[in-house]
Image 1: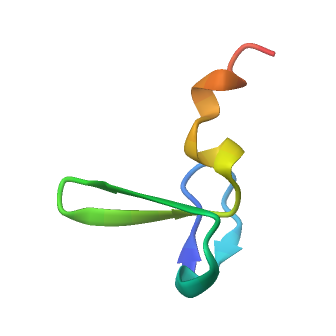
Image 2: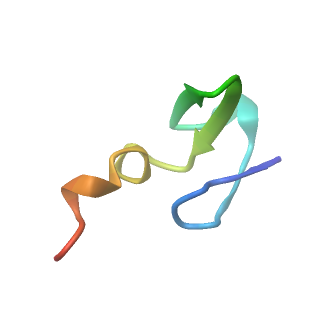
Length: 43
């Protein structure tokens, strides 16, 4: 299990809704909204 870096939710790497690679590390997200949090910033 991985931890979504935005919301902190535990995410199964095989079933993650979205992923992103940065600096040689893969990040796993529970939903597409967490992958693009700037869309919701300030609301």
